[in-house]
Image (cartoon, rainbow, N blue to C red; front, side, top):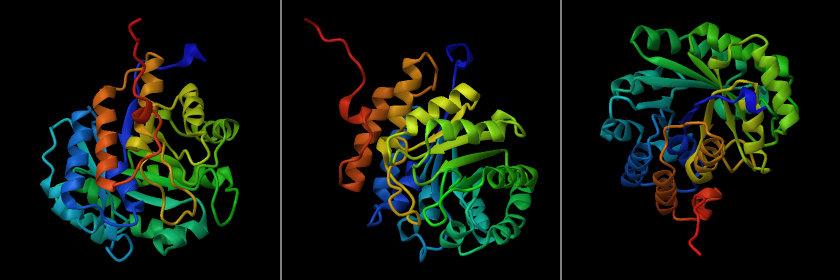
Length: 305
């Protein structure tokens, strides 16, 4: 395995969106700004900021425009937002974002619960989002949720996930993030899914979005890494989950991922100490402890005798 490891990996931070959308009460705008500032200070270059969806569906992200307009990110930091339809895209463009993301599930039931659309209806909506976004000079990322399992349907056929991913890339997405939305994945399952994807799709077009609900996210990330995946989604301190996937709390903690990668000699460009501080900021803004391991234990340090 050591012979296949890369020299560097890209981490895509999702806590301001995927993390905060699952909170019982909305986080104040100032708290969101503080969190994003701490993430940028830690060296994260790709940050999913919010979601331009109806406030009736996700009230925690009702301040999407105000947040997007209020963040002054350095030129090398890309802020993104989910946009499920043409209206969401127009809101994101008006707010000055350079990147957006579209999303759907590999499970019909979860897709309807999450977006109130069938999979085919989601693709019809994307046809009104992706081409205009590309024409406006924006980049578009894709998400496929419930690839590892659905809370309503159980196992999801791998071929279905592969084809959905191919369709998103054909539509113009520069990358597709493959999601273990409910955190049921195991290393062998990860190997089977990622291998099937890589048999038809270049590794640079894929990312892994893993939840640690059952404690297997890092193990699954390691399998993806060995197979050639170089992009991973994570959420500071393990913040978040999916409101339409019961029991799905627990994204892969960014600190845990960075600690493992840097400890293996793989560069992330992220300052672990500052990332741990960002985890503390996340705890302050949501007013509760968060489950990530490294922000609690701290980085490894030698003690004087």
